[in-house]
Image (cartoon, rainbow, N blue to C red; front, side, top):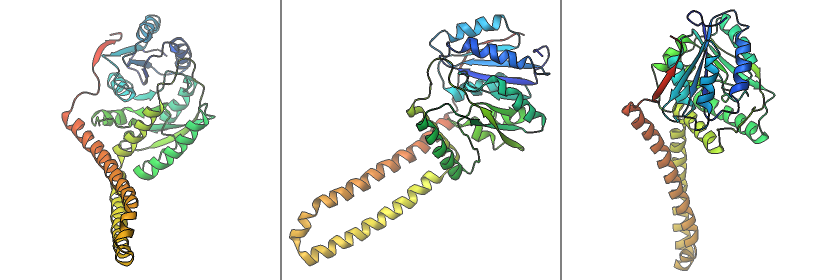
Length: 315
């Protein structure tokens, strides 16, 4: 059923340099949505792509009903692109997915079924992942670590294919935190969340936009955005290091008195090693505290997460 009335379902897709996937994505997506007995729309957010992604989106829109194209002024990142899609979407149910087809569009009816059963937040767990062994291992460790530190129970933090009710999305939009993780933030507003297994496929074309550095940055956002445990760990580690330093100082003093001044001079490199360890720990602590302070600074400035250049939709 096409978008002849107010859509019941909105599919939000952020795109950044995805020209190799546009044609295949929308062929499969619109074929799948055409089987659903409810009105829908597709909200595509071009996140400042430098290739022909925007041109291809506008071309696709000419021949398809129910498609909205949002063009951001520059690349603001996936989080901001999804927030822009949330703001533009009109559906009671909102599904997000990646444009690289690692999230098969054919899984969307299963999320719709979960919505119809009364769930307001639908997470997904990737089955048969096509990622590298390193990424699978890192994801497993990260999921466990973040669950323990934040108290948020999600089995798969990394899957973009997710469903949100309008109430949950409105709660997220009213609390636009700086560099937060949307699926984790959504758990605060959900009353009846669930997780379902979904298929996972290899990227159709192009290359992944998530480098190791970006993945580490995402994990840092998760830990710092939803937990104070990093600061608490620093407190405990600092206390232990201080006690060890005191004990070591007493030991060195006792050995100096016992062996004389000659021994103390020969132990200078040990002291330097201990000093470097403590100084390194201090710089680490300052960097962590600085990140928290930086987030506070970004939040109080209240700058917009994104700037719209143009929105293309049928009136």
